[in-house]
Image (tube, rainbow over all chains, first blue to last red; front, side, top):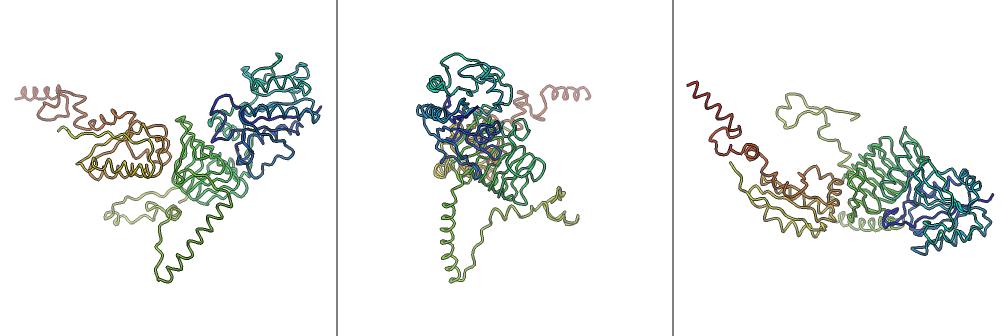
Length: 379
Length: 146
């Protein structure tokens, strides 16, 4: 039987839901791979390969991982009402391409449905459309539609998956569901991935138990990674930075010196400034979603949270800096002036703290204002 | 000894970028020139605060402590609370839920705190921090002993 999938990314019913920084959560990375990619991988595991994808955001705007390529996928875009029209057209395309059954999945929720069981249920029930709902009976925006029933599909899309033309049976699913409505859900999904509750293993090499590092990631030797945590591909973790309590740093991200990331997710292409305390948050696209305070804050200051610019712009920037430095240093040479060395943060961070220096003899202590501090750890 | 120094409550503007922070600092500077200034910044209106805004707060706190005074924060908006936590500056300030709480906190030190718990103490000539009852008992027993 030719079963194909149509994945809809977008079409949220409530404003501000299922979107972070203007990008649907379904297109964002979780533990090194976009949710959409994980759904496609899962479909492929059940032998469903040909899929159509309809998004509200053009794929060019999505900061995908370098390894995320979706060969043979048909992309369609549409905003607002056009989104549902694009979905209808994509369904018709799949039907014309020879599909007998189309699984319509809206991301939306991330679910770990047994698609084989769903198809079997649909065939046994003999319905035109089968809706999937969770164990409480709440619909999950996942449907199995017979490809020949185009009118039923069109009716469903025109009513934004809320109404069906003919009443049908519900397939109740009791497995893993994450509705991915808010930043909190994204964070939960990452933690569930670490805990093995959701089958989304981190994409990277496990360098120590519970610590995964992606390709070309650079972790400074003085940075501390405490399990469980994930460092995405091409990420830089600078000196004295700490990643702890299930923190996730996605690809092309910079965590600057001395910053502590605790129980947080850093979204792709983000620069987290030096000496910060990122706790219980999702950070990215110059925003912080603080989960404990339930607040979304826009950060305009690049010193705190910035966005990593694309490689050509970074190259131009460094070339310009070099061009600026050259005449300055030549002028300094001509004037025989020594360059005034400004203390850099990275030097300051690498310098051992005064308290950790060699303890002084007792008689010397009387004359000083400092008390001896015991050395600890590996210092 | 009762403090009659005024507590100044100042509302911080909505945006605290470099320019706004400088303007605000100029505005509040006269208050910090007083002897032992007692200042409360109400951050309820703050929607955006950056490193310059945090720097301004720290400068103000430094200015206040140089003159033996204190700067407290009150009524933090979620945005300002998140940025203060992010920059680790929340642990440097005394933070109160409301400006009234912050103002009251200035008078919650001894001997004013004692006066709050034992209202009659202010009139007693000696041992002002003991309850009036115990003081009178002591004086009675002294008289008896004599």
